[in-house]
Length: 184
Image 1 (tube, rainbow, N blue to C red):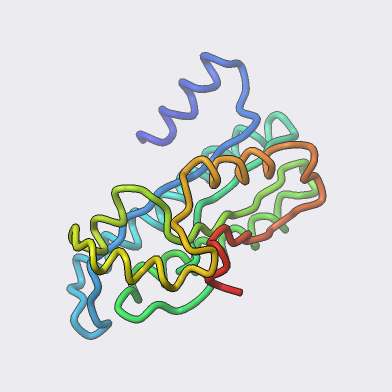
Image 2: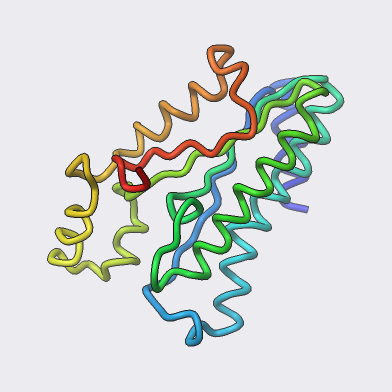
């Protein structure tokens, strides 16, 4: 109901919905697969996957009325590769890519383009969840980034804006890594 209301308010205020960026995501601390509690697994899937799907569901309904639109979903580099200790997160972000690719094929003929971005390690509060504020752990994480630094949120925003622009009109159903080279 909250998502439906959000879309209705957007259309009421602006008259239409041209683009949408679905950026739902939570992460757990590092934990082995067998040790994940069911409620933690379900919450991860609910926010990371179901949140994106619910937004897309209502966005698509509006965009179909218009005959056009662009949707960009936020997955993760964890949706492109396995990460030990983050299987619940990885499963949800892999699923976002599958959802993106399938929906992209379903709706491109109706004028709606759908893609995903797959950020690597970005300077956000999520890094605090992973490291628990441990500066040594943060320094070790940066060492695995070939570019030698974390990504800034503005760099993700620039990629999303490009995917929403006419300059990317033939980019359809892609999961674009913005990760400083980690998944290369």
